[in-house]
Structures are given as structure tokens and as C-alpha cells.
Length: 308
Ligand code: NAP
Image (tube, rainbow, N blue to C red):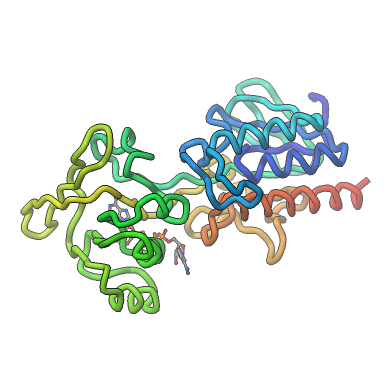
């Protein structure tokens, strides 16, 4: 049996790192399995302008590096690798990286989620250069631009409406002839004169190498293609929570998110807490993830005190 820490944290976005800061500062000696791509989704963004405390904005990777350094300052220890197995049958809970085993009396899961991408050529290289998966984060940079939003769910329609605050025109591209979004979102989008809908359409390819200049749309019924000039492409086709590791061990909802108790970060296993996008498909903001990381840390601390 390896050394047992008070708290074992799996995942290192704003939720995991905030949990690390709080638990380290509470002398709970957390060990954080931060993953190979530590820092989460903010490592893929450019400027973050809506994280309180940074009036001039801060680059996403810098914000995450600062959070990590803050956790380290209070003694949090980091393992830069992906956990490939977990044990949540009873405390102390375990996680493995290959043959290396880590144990904590309480566990906080903050493995996040990833935005689904279209999977077309050039897409990855244009992220941050016209292609985005977060309107709240990047919309501001598209003042008076022509924008394409892909998707037909609540996210796509909400983002399209939000983006009309900045864009000269927003074209919603949806692969079918009806939206899956709630009626209120649809009514709002249809009533907005800046929003046009391209029904039965998919983005076939991207135009531009250094920055996005346009997209080629393909009609899913006729197969016809057409060019649409746009400098912004917001992909809103859903997120996938990173929960494969926990399937069969913790209760997940129908979309694969970890289920937590109301007003709490407690999962279906007593002593195991989940924070951030891995359990939140509504807000998905760095600040809400950090907030729930703080909740998980406080709940873990109280749980440990109650189970001395
Ligand atoms: P979603 O409901 O799963 O919708 C995803 C949309 O993207 C669908 O319209 C889907 O098309 C389309 N899509 C999926 N893969 C695609 C692909 N490869 N190419 C083109 N289109 C693709 O996801 P979401 O909109 O992110 O919402 C997730 C959850 O959060 C939902 O429960 C939603 O209600 C909730 N949410 C709520 C609010 C709010 O209440 N304010 C805001 C945002 C999200 P099909 O329709 O053809 O499948």
C-alpha cells in the first residue's frame, strides 16, 4: 500500500487546481494526478477577459500556470500523467498511473470535458484564429465580423443569440431541418434579425490557413456546396465529459456526466467528490469550475473531519 494522503485529486483544470489550493492550505497534503495535458480547456484558449481579478485580461495558459504555482506554494504535489485506473470501493480511494498507485482518504474528481469538434481538415490549426468552441470566451473579439455557428441544441442557439451583440451577421448551420433546442431558445433566435439559418447544412471545409476567411457549406439533401465568407466559426455541437475512467464505479447521467447531490459536489460514493465540467453541463465557465473546486475541497475537509 502506498503512502495514504488525505486528499487525492484527479484532474487539473480550474476545478482541480482550486481544490488543490484549498486542501493544501488546509494541510490535507493533496496529491494531484494532473494528466499529460494539465490545465484543462483553458490551456487551449487565448485571452481570458471574464475571470474576476484581471482587469486587463489574462492568457488562459498563464492563468492555469498561476493556479498551479499557487497550489504548489502550499505543498500540493503533482503527478504529470493520466490516471488509467481507479478504485472507489472504499476509503482510502485509489488511482493508478501504470503500476504506480496513489491513495487518498477522500477523492476529488475534476477531469473536465472536451468540446466536440467537427473533425474537418485545418480545424485544429485555426482554433484561436477564427475557430472557437466558446462564445462567452471569444465573442468579444468578433465585433462587426460575420460568424458561423454550428449546431442545433441550446448551446448553439444561445451562442448565436449572444454573438449577435458583436457580429454583423450570424449564420446558424444545422445538419437537420429542425432544432433540438428548447422552444424559448428557438423563438429568441428566430426573432433576431441578425441570425440566419442554413438548414440541412454542414461545414464541409474551411477557407484560410493563418486565419479563418470562410467556410464551404454542403447541403445534406442535395449535396450542393456554397462558400460563405466568415471570419468566425463557433462550434457548439456538445461536449464530452472525461468520465470513461469512472463508468461503472460512479453514477453518471445519460450524457456521461458524474451525478452529484443537489447543492453539493458529493458523488454516488461517500467520500468521493466531483467538481467542474465533469459534473456541470450548464455553466461550464472557469470561474464556476473554480467555485465548485472550492466546494469540493471544503466538503472533503468536512468529510475527513467527520470520519477521523
Ligand atoms: P446538444 O443538446 O447535444 O446539441 C448538440 C447539437 O449539435 C445537436 O443539434 C446536434 O445535431 C448537433 N451536432 C452534434 N454532432 C454534430 C456534428 N458532428 N456535426 C454537426 N452537428 C452536430 O448539446 P448542447 O447544445 O451543448 O447542450 C447540452 C446540454 O446542455 C443540453 O441538455 C442543453 O439543454 C443544455 N444547455 C442548456 C442551456 C440553457 O438552458 N441555457 C444552454 C446550453 C446548454 P442533432 O440535433 O441533429 O443531433
